[in-house]
Structures are given as structure tokens and as C-alpha cells.
Length: 232
Image 1 (cartoon, one colour):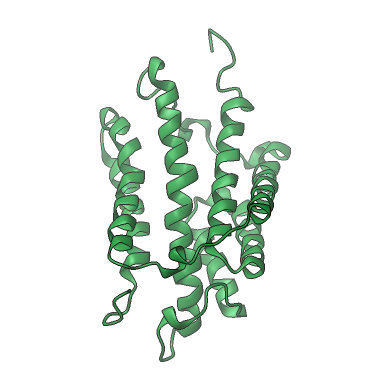
Image 2 (cartoon, rainbow, N blue to C red; image 1 turned 135 degrees about the horizontal axis):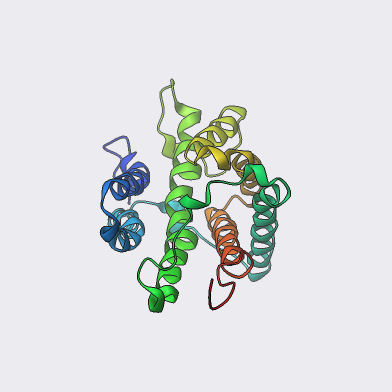
């Protein structure tokens, strides 16, 4: 069982901070180190999650139960929200980021492009939803309800609605993304909050988040001109 002798923040906060730290370190390392960071960025938060999970934290993950019909609905919602995320940038080119900051699938070498994309998929569609949802929906959403009051956030039920927690999760999730993504981060997290209140199950948010990210990566690979031809 989770240790209740402390405030209980670290299992939720440290994986998220670990990822941010890995990103920040990666920006300061030379180009030759970037392939290693492609693996380190997801492994650091995942390792922390596994460590805390082995210690009995995350009861909300142990309580996961999903019927296949619910899982299909979550997949459909994730795909619809991927369209929501991508649509403004397709319709309004001025919102798009600088192409120079784009992910380079050839950073491991031309022959290793599938491996680079596989690692990107692993981090983007599997690990990122896990540490973000544990932080945003399991911690921030519940902690917002007890902040400034006496109480343990772990006593707040998963997916419990309050106006305060609804707004706080939107703000925290949005500022955790780069500014050019804020246009779509706000409606995405607001709508997934509503889906979370309906489902009352963290597995649903993990599915929706993972499908959204995987669909966006798939669109970048197969629909964004990544492989325009032999000379491209």
C-alpha cells in the first residue's frame, strides 16, 4: 500500500520533473549526444514510475478495468482530438512552428530511421501519456482541491469535478507545452477533462492521450512529406 507518512507528491512530480530535466540537459549537449537523449528522455521518467509503482504507489493504475467497447470509444475520442490538435496548423499556416525545430528522424543515420521513429513513438505515445496523466490528472487535479486547506490529495476521488481543479489542470497542462501549442492545448485538455469525468478511470485518459499522440506522429510520418522521394 502507498506510504501515507509523507505528503505523497514525489511519485507524481518526480517523473514529470525528470522528463523536463532530460529535455533541458539535451538542449545543452552537443549534437553527437542527441541520439542518446532520444532514449534517455523516455527512460528516465519511465524508470521513476516503475520504481514508485514497485513500491506500491499509484493505486489508480491497479484499479484499471476497461471493457473492449469502452476502449474502442477511447480510441475514437483520441483520433478525434488528434484532428482537433492538427487542424489549426493545417488551416492557418502562420501558427506553425519553425521547421528548424522539428524532430530529425535521421539523427541515428539514414539506415536507422525506423529505429529513431520507433523510439519516438515509444516516448511520445506510451511514456509521455503515462507521466503526464499521473501528474496532471492524478496529482494536480486532486491537489488543487486540497491546496490551502487541511487534507491529503490522495483522499480526493479520481476524476472528481470542481471548478478550481478544472481550471488549474488546464493552466498547468498548457504551460507545460511550448507557446505555439497553446492554441490547441487548451481545448484538448478541457475536453479530455470532461471525458475523464465521464469515464472516471485513468486508463481511459491514458488511451485517449496515447492515441492522440500516436496519430499525430503517424500524420507527421505518412502525411507530412517526411519521405517525399529518393532525393528528399
